[in-house]
Amino acid sequence: MGREKNGEAKEPNPQNEATCRMAKKMKTEGAKKHYRKRKYLGEPPFAWIKSVMGFNQFSLRGVDNVTSEWNLACLAANLKRMHRKMAWT
Image: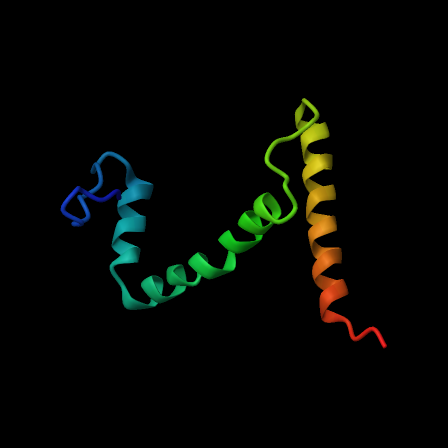
């Protein structure tokens, strides 16, 4: 599913059924259109949390602690966005 240096997509390993199904699906125009949306839907919030809020690494260890810390960072980001969008008069 990756790309070669010349920009052409290489064929997936036939033993990986799921990868082959995804490659076949991605050849349709509808799937390409749907996956193009991922570029501007998912990445900017992560970049914004890292660059604007300065959240570059977790302070705590363990899955539960990291999950809590990530939820707190997302809450702060969403509150900041809501604050900007609300009409405070």
